[in-house]
Length: 131
Image (cartoon, rainbow, N blue to C red; front, side, top):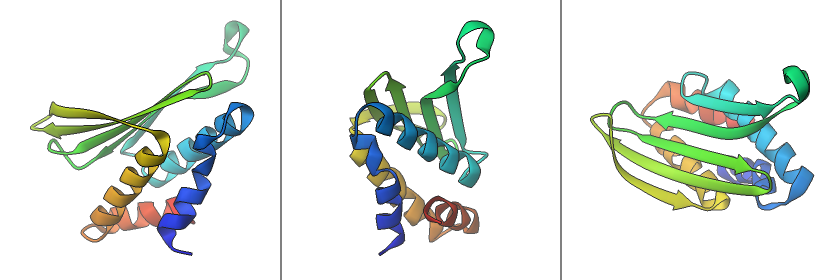
């Protein structure tokens, strides 16, 4: 099994509904935060009364490249998951395209693999995601 297949399988729950979806998003967010700490931002909401309850992932953003890079964003609202890929040039968004969750994971994985060929940091991050 290739690294890409392993990562795809770990994110396969993004296609599921209900509890499976919530768990797979939490796992994906944790993997991205630990593997790409300077490039990943995870927004969590919930917590119940006075913020003492369990918080759930509402949005994941992964920034790849510098000013002329790409931002991957996954937004979770109840049982609905929306993915986007935003291309930037000079810090300005030039293209934003919607991606279903499967394509979002596939595109992010492919871009990380491409970057891993040029960067030891990206290579280590990809190994952390599939490991």
